[in-house]
Length: 127
Image 1 (cartoon, rainbow, N blue to C red):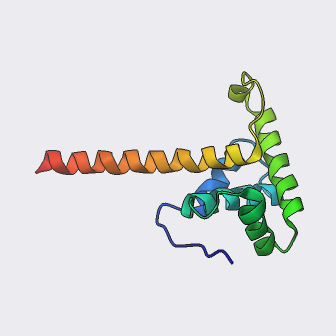
Image 2 (tube, rainbow, N blue to C red):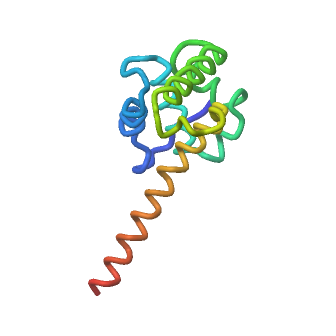
C-alpha cells in the first residue's frame, strides 16, 4: 500500500493545469492519471522507482482500474502533448513514459529549490 505524504510543494491542481496547458485533454482520464503519477513521484521520489511494480498499480487502485490501462492512458496523454507542442517538435523522439514523469517531477522540484534559495538570499540581504 502506498500512502501519499503531505508536502506543501506537491500541488496536484498545479500539475493537472500544467498538463492541460501543454495540450492534454482537460477532462481526460489519462490527464488525471498522468498528473497523479507526477504528483506521487514528486511527493515520494524514493518510493516510486519502478513504474510497473509501484507507480501504475497505485494509480490503478486509486482510479479503480488495472495497471495496464493506466500505462496506456499515460502513454496516450504524453503522446498527445508531444504532438501538440511545436517546441517539442525538434526532438528526435518522444520520451518514454517514466522519463516524462520523472522529468516533470524534477522540473518543479528544481524550481521550488531555486525559489527557496532566492528567498533565503533576500532574507540575508535584508538583515
